[in-house]
Image (tube, rainbow over all chains, first blue to last red; front, side):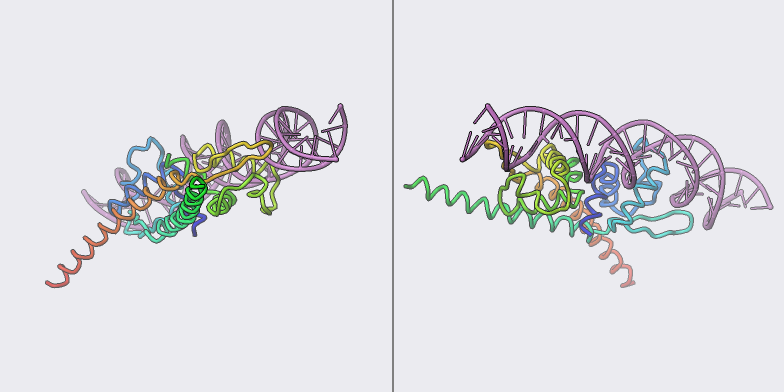
Amino acid sequence: MVNSSFKALSHPIRRQIVERLAAGPATVGEVTGDFGVSKPAISKHLKVLEESGVVTRVVDGRTHVLSLRTEALDEATEWMVRQREIWTRLFDVVEDHLKEESKR
Amino acid sequence: MVNSSFKALSHPIRRQIVERLAAGPATVGEVTGDFGVSKPAISKHLKVLEESGVVTRVVDGRTHVLSLRTEALDEATEWMVRQREIWTRLFDVVEDHLKEESKR
DNA sequence: GCTACAGTTAACCAAGTGGTTAACAGTTCG
DNA sequence: CGAACTGTTAACCACTTGGTTAACTGTAGC
């Protein structure tokens, strides 16, 4: 959903996790990195990312391997691109209108 | 900033306001519409959108005219497109690798 | 079997968010 | 001037968020 993806991406740590995963799948320990934050905190962030569909998880033995689900990012991107298009179209129309106006 | 734009867009009412503004500038009363929410609530949402740079405001007499600042949306869009590109590039590499593997 | 390791769950807390109503500030207009 | 209108600010409240530490679950490996 557009709704939850934006929410998921609204926290800097979660965006950094996404950034890490954009470079390839990683375990929880690997994405934990050095945010200066405890393991349970990361665990919660991952839950948010997973529930919003931005990240998927495959349990492998005692490690969990995380991957990015680009489709979720795509939905959010599409929403923004669409808004931007509507707006710039209008902007062009207004600009044209102003040009016509100044001719007279 | 990427930071605050995502946060600003993380609330459904604020996204609907953006959607309304993508169809052209509007006064506070016009964007208030029928969200089933009070005027002060909208006022707060507008403040968030304005502070994050997504929306600008021009006071005209007793009405305030709101406009979309597409640049803010662009920044956020670019971030997501970038992550998506990194990821799909990796995905292709992995796929190629698997193909090579299966040949043998 | 026992210890170390990877990670989650539970219980708690401070701060932030999103909403309310009531009061206010400035503008328009008869 | 005074009433109506547009919008914000103030004070308050319930709920969520993001963090903590401590305890737990399950896997690996000696």
